[in-house]
Image (tube, rainbow, N blue to C red; front, side, top):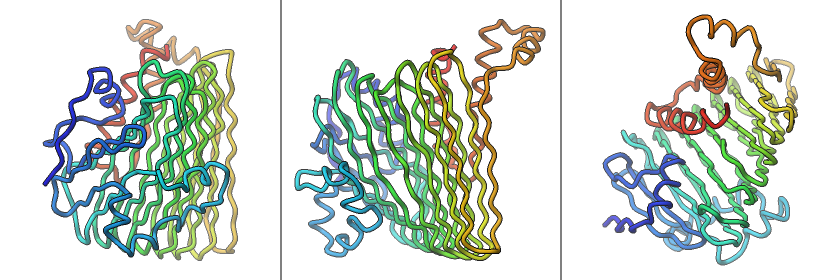
Length: 368
């Protein structure tokens, strides 16, 4: 029996909507909401999708302990050590073998009190399944301090496909330090999208994907806007072990007074490994900075790895051209910024693409 969805204050609902979470069961296959350390609701509306808290899942399945802290190390750093405690909570999402659902799973981690939220998530796409997730993380309006510490471990089984879109919406003084990693088996596809376009004190994250299976695929995309004094230090790393496996890392970064470290690393360690890394940055302010750090590492003679990186400002000739076509200067600037942020993500379900577009549209005017 699905759990009752709690009544939420309007400001909380507004925050959730900005990170793609809608309290309407007709539009999603499962829902999860955790406020601080308390799970407010955890329900599945599709028989092939399992959604419960990680505490309940570990009690229910002995085999799940083999997945817990398997791909992320407990002692990776001081933040993983802090999460390795009894009071930790989070979600367990599992698509059963062969499962394919029309609507995405929605999961929200909400920070309401000025404390540390400690989260550990496990996501499993079983063999031949297709799992689409929107994960929205946000903090309460007006919250002046707090920290989110999140561990997420992803497992994509043979010929499965997992799309994971994370949208962040924090307050100015919140620290965010997620640690995540994924294992992809033969023929599996892992698509990860990360979006942050609101002020935050610091985000520090560097997820790693292990393409262990032959002909497996990883597509990692990020859209980052750093406003005022925000520091966003993030990127993606893909280690290609499977024969014929491929990886693509795409990043769009805009600084409007904030600092962005845009990292990317592809390691080719198998025959016929293919990888491409693309990092593009745009400065909209005299303050702030963008530091692009692309890395390629070949550990096998038969690999094909490439990267391109560029950082610049909006070209005046582009603005003048659009103004000659009837746009105002602000409209021309907005159109250029919107086009810059638009990443064509291969294999993304329409529902997730729509959420990404909505998230970008919400802040487009604030950038001008």
